[in-house]
Image (cartoon, rainbow, N blue to C red; front, side, top):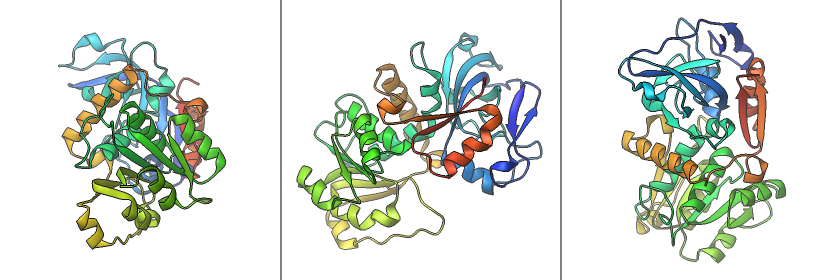
Length: 337
């Protein structure tokens, strides 16, 4: 089979297209014939810094495809099912940038007949991260679904990114009022297409003033892409018992917050990395995202505010480079091409 591997950390050029034997699923595992691999920032960051094992590393955590074999202890009824994959390569050598991958059975989720494989490959990290960000505040429930966030207001800082898009879609599915910030008119269109009720261009408008017009008492949850830059704004906007959930940052970033004001609000500042979040929270996120997909509440593509950039398997290095360079939308690898 064809697979992308790297044997030493480095830039996109360390990724090589090779021939490998088709792997056999171990006990408790399933083998998936991969259709699409989803590329995320953590994929290129780990490729840059982490030393692969002696056999090399197949990159990419997210993907979609069809189960074609199961290991001992796994119900064979899964064979033939269309699935989406999460955390394929976390502390394992088999990612999704290959024609076949093997993962623990709990890391595949039924996709159903209707949703596209492109959608399935776009779920994983962005949607699980967004779910965590939307549910860590004490003022909101830890599950999402229709009506779960009725009466609550969510601020998505960076509404045109992959996690921002996921947060908007999940929050609207849960009936929240959603405010998104963006940096350009084009990104404003994307955030609105995703379902944001209000969009603020932070380069043209004062975020605190505009958000306070919509939510005078503040917002219940802030999904934050750049807390080092936005902490002062977030501190002015978080409501009592709300939470600022930061899911991205650069090595060395620091932030300062006004302690007394945050104490008065009993506010929570939560840092989110999906790989190491509590297992219960992750399990609930997987269930809720699967339900949102089954409800038809999750979409991809330009009309959903998430343009797709699709590369063939042989161009996985270019796909990684696109994410590293900040491509707006979702980068996918078509493993069948």
